[in-house]
Image (cartoon, rainbow, N blue to C red):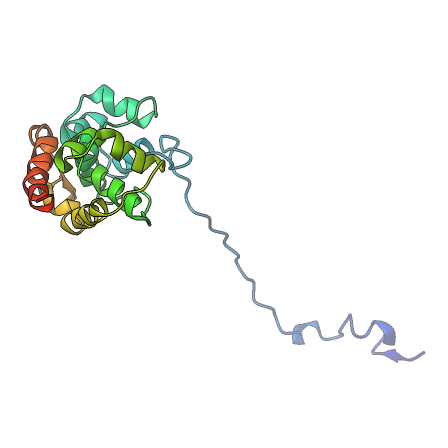
Length: 209
């Protein structure tokens, strides 16, 4: 077995008599990055309207009192919504959507789903929209519960309703938060339902003629 410069031939590939000739390998710094976790005040999951309100409030660094003033409710009401202890009444939906700056209501597909979605965005209860459309409340309840479907003239009326109110934000007060987002003050929020119902009443009168 031969020798290479005093080194066993089998080991020649592992050891070199001229170590200074071995090229140096670059020393790489590996930095692992992960998304910064949200503060514990944020909800673990966003499933409810209360979760959306809490997340939006924390993102804007607002106090519950400030949000309650914008929406037009008491501070304890915001607390209960964020804790999912209570659910916002329909009449507050326009002000809430305006505060959020987006619509968290799942996208509707069917005629009745779209009708229910727009109705809620306008802040109209089933009772109120029934009165405006000249229908029995049980009829609207049955449609939205999937117990029966509208037909004939009612289908035409609902389609006209959606064409008229396809953009509910256009019928809501255009106010802004300190951060520049559309929102509503406490004084104006008190009249949101009346305002939406008022414009709805006037436009729906034309629909049902």
